[in-house]
Image 1: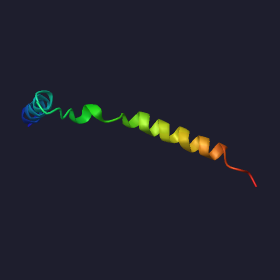
Image 2 (image 1 turned 60 degrees about the horizontal axis):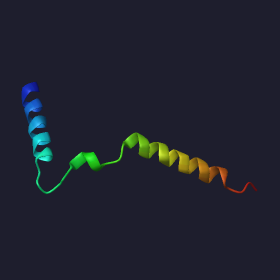
Image 3 (image 1 turned 180 degrees about the horizontal axis):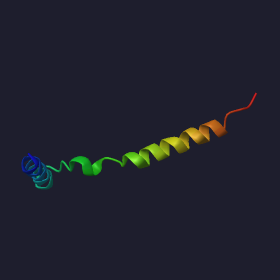
Length: 53
């Protein structure tokens, strides 16, 4: 089973790398940790800029 999964993953990566139409796949996606950190910073800034009544 492990060999099948490794072969499938290698074939998938080969198809992505040799696609003549671009299709970089996952390479263009932003890093999940970076997106989460940016969102936290945005929420923090929004919370700090709120008026305190």
